[in-house]
Image (cartoon, each protein chain N blue to C red):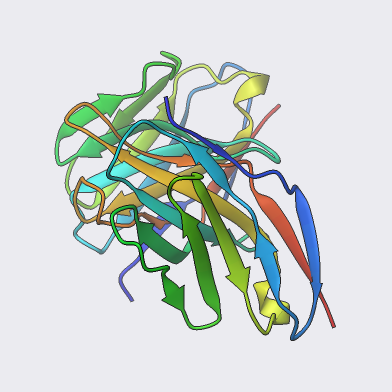
Length: 114
Length: 116
């Protein structure tokens, strides 16, 4: 089945130690998104790629970076994780930008910072 | 800026009964999409139903239907014949798109419990 796959499901990192979360998709969608979802809160968009075009949300901290080396893969890099970065990180894809295309989500990676 | 409000943190329903989840939103845009997503515990978020603002007819997907009131900026989800598998967190979401932005704005969610 075509899908959005996030690895790992659970990630533990130390305070200040860089960590990378990965997302892959077999849907061949043009747009890939990274959302941060803290406990009992709504998912919040960090940034998205439209093809190779990177779009950062204005309030996304500089500590968060992203890479999309090809259509299928997208990475979330947290350069110096703090305790406040502990959250579920959701990757999503959309066939195209615009209103019609729904988002398809992965299972998420739950990040713990010790 | 667009906002989405879900005023019911938790709801419960008995199996086979009907439940309605509320959602209101605020926007100055005339064309947009609204969505309901379901997030079961420890599982991925999946699309339940969507509604285009220009369509007056309420969307329906099997047991799921919406009551879209554009003037009131209200978008409620009705689940008929509730099943145990419907238990999940439900998020109402607004799709905002322009040349500068493409985002799905979520409400804070409603946790639905289904009792046998």
